[in-house]
Image (tube, rainbow, N blue to C red; front, side, top):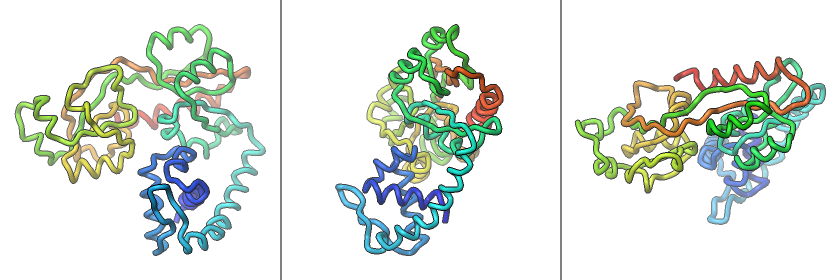
Amino acid sequence: MKIEHLKYFLEVARTGSTHKAAEELFLTPQNLGLIIKGLEKEIGEDLFIRTSKGMRLTAEGERFVPYAREIVAPYDRYISSRKKTSNILKMYTTPALAKEVREMQEMRWGGQYYLSVQKKSPDDLIEMLHKGVEGIYFLSMKQKNLDLLKNKKRFTSLFTEDTTLMVCHRDNSLLTHSDITPELLEQYLALKGESYNEKEEDMGAALENAMHIDDTALCKKLMREREALYSLLSHLFYKNFQEPDEWAVVQEIPVTPYEFVLIYNMNNRLEKAETEIAEYMKKSFMAES
């Protein structure tokens, strides 16, 4: 049983909703739901009653709450005591990208800094940059937008994304066809990830009715069991699909290039922390590409 999972349980109990709790925890509702079910299986009891209006604690769930708090509280106090002797760096990013850097909040950077990740819309991030709001910004930008900031802000380029991949399981019957046509693709269940760049390129009729699912585990399950096709940006494929022999790339579709960058909008230079953060993120995103 992980302390982190107990914290997730308490957040669902507090909000009464996996969707609301997932937003606060930088998780997808699907992933959070699976974690809660795993916790219930481990305990051997249902902790929640699931209704159309949300999640309500069972009698056993009510009984479990104070025990979970007793375990979580000392851990939180310990983490807080460490952070009190350190400085907090605010990292601003989009809700989708926040999930990618969630674990970085528990790490110390430059020997003395912790990150506090805060979610904002892309438009809000650009406005905050122009207003000079201090922080580290993690976002993807079109080259023309990045050019506007080059002379005003310090930034580190992490990687450029210019390809969307359509992938499937290696046993998918689609791979038995020598000619993969749009009409053939329409016969398969189509999925797309949260970073799918649908506004930039016309991916064709095969994806017009694609299900938007940002839970990698669920997508893999559907690809294995229902011959689903999944479209996602290439760096996410190389990062999240660690079983390369199990998956096949059906199509590679160029998209308008986006540069993923860290932009530093700080009065004081934090060179050691900045370097560590940038190197960690480059390694995290691109290790399998």
